[in-house]
Image (cartoon, rainbow, N blue to C red; front, side, top):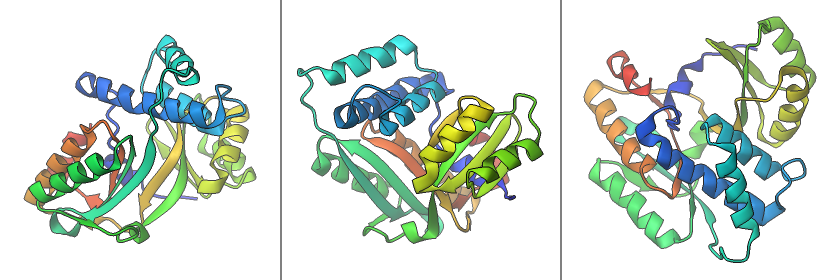
Length: 248
C-alpha cells in the first residue's frame, strides 16, 4: 500500500481559514440537517449523521452549534427539503471537475453552476462525462499519536483498506466506498476518532496545467465554493509548483 498524496492539494474545504469558516459551517450544518431528517438524531445508529458529525469536528465547529442544528432538524418548523445534485464538467486546459451539492432549488443551483463555468471558460458536461476519470472511494484521516506506519498498515489491512499514505501529521486511509463505515468504526477502536471520514473523488491521473490556466481554475473553484449549495469541489488538475501556496 503506497501512493502519492498530491491529490490532497485539490480538496477545497478550507476550514482553517477564518474568511471561509462561515461558508464551511453552512455546508456542514446542511449535511447535519439532511442526516437527521433522513435517519434520526443518534449518530451511533445513523451513519450519515456520524459522517456529518466528523465533518463538524474537521471544521472546528463548536459542539453547541452542532447540537442546536440537530434539535432544529428534529423539529417540525424546518420544512426545507434538500436534494443531492452532482455536476461534472471541464475547466481550463481540459481539467475535469466534479461538484457535489445539497440544494433546496435545483434550477437555481444548476443555473449558477453553469454561469460560473461559462465565466471562466469551462463547460458543464452530462452525468458521468468526467467521473470515469476518478475513483469514488472512502477517505479517512487519523492522527499519528506516536503510531508507526507499520502498525497502521496492519490495522487498516485487517479491515480491508485499499491504500494508506503517511502524511506530516497523520495517516490517510482509502477504502472501497461501501466499506467506509466499517473501516471507520474498526479503525476508530484502534486509532481513535478520525480527523476526517467521507467519500472522496480521487483522480486516476492528474492533468498538468500551465500557470495561467491554473490561476483561472482556482478562480472558478473559489466561486463554486462560495456558493452555499455547493458541498465539495474536486478536480484532476496538477497545478504548477508556483501556485501550490494557494492550497496552504
